[in-house]
Amino acid sequence: MGDAMEIRTVGVEDVLRARDARVERQRALISRHGAPLISLTMNIAGAVKRDALIQEGFFEGVRRVEKQLAWHGATVLEAVRTLDFTGCEQIWAVRAEAAELKVWMRAVEEADALGRLLDVDVIGADGAKLERGAPRRCLICGGPAQFCARSRAHSGEELYHRARQILTEWRAGERAAAVAERAQRALLTEALVAPKPALVDRENSGAHRDMDIFSFAGSAAALRVYFEACVRLGGEAAGDEDAPEDVLERLRFLGRRAEEDMLRATGGANTHRGAIFSLGLLCWAAGTPCADVEELTGRAARIAGAALRELERLTPEQARTGGECQYLEFGLTGVRGEAASGFPSVRGCALPALREALAKGMNLNDACLRALLALMARVDDSNILRRGGMECLRRVQAQAGALLARGCGEAELRALDARLVVEGVSPGGSADLLAVACFLHFLEEDHILEGEVQP
Image (cartoon, rainbow, N blue to C red):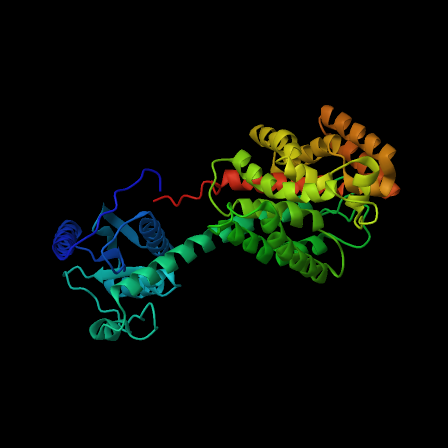
């Protein structure tokens, strides 16, 4: 959470002093505004009341309270925040009925596991605390919390570790959901961009007869669970310590299941096999915070290197996929080589083209078309090579480069689209890398790489 904070333990006297100070702050707010208050603290047993993880959960609690107030149109008159070794607290003076506030805040407390760690009290304008009604549930056994507390059914240490487990799982879940949503959005964005040369887009199916835009939508939806699983795998403590071969095999296990989900969602069409590999690796790499795209792709490259080494040991008898056959015939390493090198075509070509176009005021669709053409001009697209051969690949690269140099006019783009459709050639490899570029752009744009929860 930015600057390192001092971790101190609290004693009984510290707790009592903090409680008295909170009451004085509440009285002062009521005196100034004559309005009911909301008081948020964290329900953390034990001697450590504030550290980075607890504070992160507290900031999420603040967001939830303020969103709930905004959704109900309540006016915040003043807010006072206190961050101390005795705990985190925020008090709001709100123009609303106290009874309504209590109903709204109970919803915050009971929304999920993290909500059970939030103590959200409502104090009337007369200074009386409103009762919550139904008793809160115990963090450990689920029974009435008051009964467990009076009977000392669970030790303070048990309650403390359970609270940290809840916070850790919440943080991991939030990151997994955020990263996976951007991966899914990247796939949908790539599919919708139009007019793409001979590729499925929102206008037509290009050179493909076994899939359409709905196939891509269904596939992107089915892969969301896979992306989240990859992020969670990358967030495990041992992730960076394990051998790349071990991590690769775990990702492949997830990837094979994802392919089955994709094929089931598309009726057997291979919409995203290349993206399953590339985005799966990058989602794994994004499982823990990193400084920038270079660090992220470098982390993925370490694992992809194991896949590349397998390709380098390949014999003709072992070759089964199109990519493996292309490696033996042409020496092309395909998506494995791209990933093992840290996605240089994306970082050095597609992403700069996308950023530059957006900076000039282009919409996302047109910026993505620029990035796609930049990739088509540079990448040895395995899909074009498989469908049209090496001569066709070189010709398409030259045409894409020339079109990009002339400004990517729509008429010329549609003419290239028509020619490639007639030839049955589709730059599917470049499309997968466009999705990677979109994914990295979305992570950067939404400040998800760093992984910090801001107050």
